[in-house]
Length: 131
Image (cartoon, rainbow, N blue to C red; front, side, top):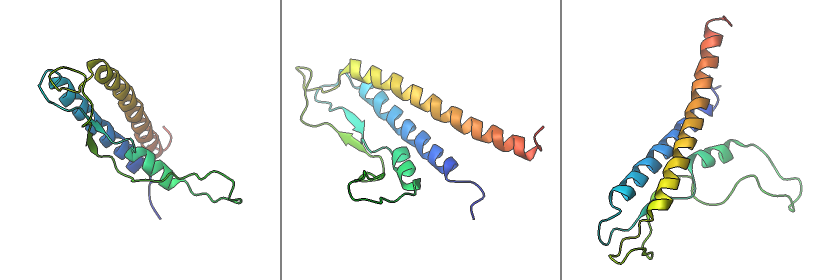
C-alpha cells in the first residue's frame, strides 16, 4: 500500500518536463543569431502525460471503443530540428515561436506548481487535524 498516490510523482515529472523545456527554449533564444545553429525541442510525448496515461486503469468492453493509452515512448527527450532553415545563415530558430513556447511553458509550470502546493496544503491540514 502506498502512503501517497502517484500524484506527487506525476507532478514531479511534470515539473521536470517543464524545467527541461525551459532550458531548451532558453538555449534556442540565446543562439538565435548563431550561424548554422539548429533549434532544439523537447519530444512531444510529455512525461507527465505518460504518467497520467499509465495511472488510468480501464479496459475496453468492445474493440470499437477508443483506447485510453496512447502508443509510443514514455519519456521526454531533446530533439534537434535538422532539416529546417529560417535565416540565410543556416539558423533554424524562430524567435516568435520560441517566445510563445516560453510563455506557454511558464503557464504550464505555474499550474503544476499550484497543484503541488495544493496537495501539500491538504496534507498539512490532515496532519494538523483539520485546524
